[in-house]
Every structure is written in C-alpha cells, then in structure tokens.
Image (cartoon, rainbow, N blue to C red; front, side):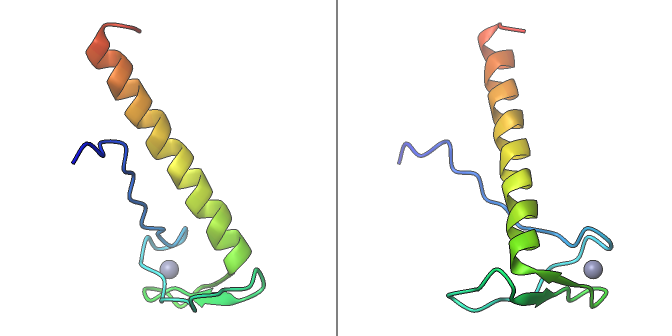
Length: 73
Ligand SMILES: [Zn+2]
C-alpha cells in the first residue's frame, strides 16, 4: 500500500469535543445531527463545513510536515 495521504477526520462537537451521532447514509443539508456528549444539535450543512475545515487543517499540517522533512521552510 502506498496510500500515505489518507487523512481521516472525526468531526468533534465544537462546544464539548464529543462525537456526533451517526446520520443517515443520504443526509440532507437541513438534517440535524446530535452530539452524544452535550446534546447540541447542528445542521448537517454545518457539520460538513466543520469537516471541510478540519480536512483543510489536517492537509495543511501534513504539507508542513512534508516540507519540514525535505528541508524547505
Ligand atoms: Zn457536544
């Protein structure tokens, strides 16, 4: 396996850091997802925005680490 760019994202609740409940296989943007930790509800669209943000951060960090390893600043 040469898949070294796999970035796995677990979206955590912004208020308590807990996990969200599973949502349906075909979620709608207006579907509500409930936090298991504090019971906070967010729209699936917002959940996606958080996930996208975390993916971007994870990729940014991966690229930084890569550049660090290769001698670039
Ligand atoms: Zn929560």
